[in-house]
Image (cartoon, rainbow, N blue to C red; front, side, top):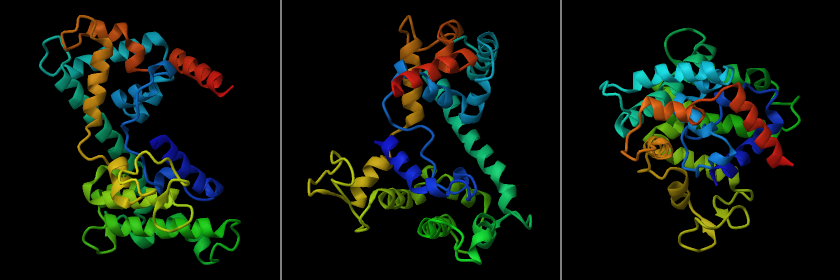
Length: 293
């Protein structure tokens, strides 16, 4: 379902993609680790991004299998913090959480300089708005084919910015800007994440999602509509630790002697589950093309 939700968001903005700054700067990110079911028969991209972080996973895609395995062996040494020769669930869980936090930090750092124009260590709404939409604002988007979409983007971004701006001073600190770019990572942004999801799917604009607008198996009170509290249980389930689930998954799939911990040997024997390479990426591309036929 989350995949369908993401597709709905992408379709909404596709018409403007060439003119507005890249979507990762302005559109809500799905949580880096979602609760979608694993389907390793279609590749290990989810596992690679969970274990390495999204950006690092891309770099492994440029390596030969031998280079990938060598780098993985060095990573295993880092994960084994107590140096007992085993990777426990706790160690793997900690590593995955660390990689996800690092990805978010790097993503924020990459975009910070684009918006902090006066370099005062904060980003004002006006700085963000002018940088993202400035070319069009003075002309009221007159030269844009889909004016309504652009106006909707501006309104959506302003609402999100004001929600992230906890003290209401119109200036985003680095933490508040992180909440703006990655609202799914912050408890105080969850209502906004739910509202944005409703907005994306609610085609008739009545503030609810009816069954014709979406699949009905999360309509818990069976009244034929999805209300915000029902969407919240689906979008932000709250007590689900996806890093924990991924750590359990990786151990379960590679722990050959079933002692609930894994060795470097067991990891390297299943290296393509943890990291990619030129070969694994090629194989996943073939699988994807086959599925699309």
